[in-house]
Image (cartoon, rainbow, N blue to C red; front, side, top):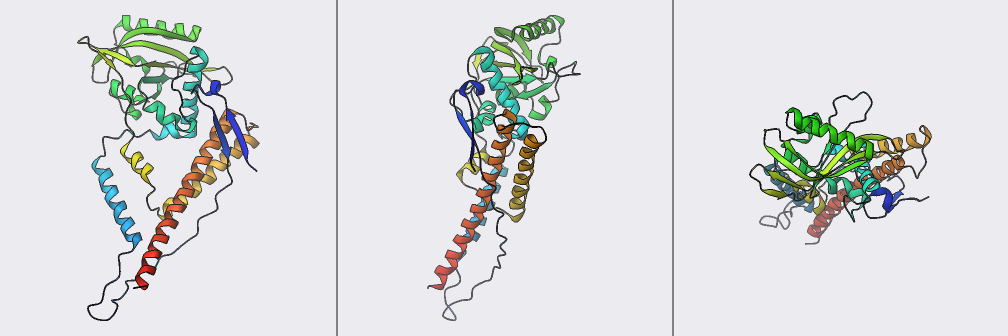
Length: 336
């Protein structure tokens, strides 16, 4: 039975409508053992040797692609794994949803719901969030920063998530007092917009963020869980105003989009385990926590399950295609 759940345009803050569909579990892949045997020369001495199998060609291309990816390592714009986990997707949804609910504007328009984590991470604006309002937190730390924000503050993703947000402002008392005042004002009014303030990167470089919107993060029950800031321009100390540009897709992600690599048995087994794990999570949300299909956590969990099933199906297809190509090459050789 097919189940369709819709997330409304207003609810997502994305300017689009998206259906989340639960699909049947993909059957386990066939276990295939390939015995590679060298085919002898035909017609005796001087005969033509066996053709190189299509599978061997594909494996060679995979090795070449791996080498190319290794050469570009260090210049990655890959979306952090935390952003595409179920919890990360929920945070990204809350960022977009809260911004729309408070300002009646969209962070991004026309973005597919499933592509929101990557779109926000590479967006042409800086977006940061910290865990103010979280119970027991006295010195809020960052819980999100997109590519533009990481570059501007000269931080890695892992380092930013350990950083108290107060360290983004100069240490002098007036700067910290102004920052605290803005945070408290936004906490009371929902959001503050149009302000500018000096900030400092991890190397001590100072810059002024301009036309900033600071807004509360609110879950679907109306509880405040944090705050976020978004801006698209900053000014350096020489007085030059810079407009933030979006980042390009990661090299490895582009390679993945060009077509799946030949999967190993271990990759297929891992994909099967990931599907089973997420299916159990969906059941737990419904049976243990009592959530319904139209609840946001269930929709996000089902979307993640669908994504994992699609990955498993793609791995199975890549393996089947490679085996079919290899068989066709040997059959063609037999016909000569």
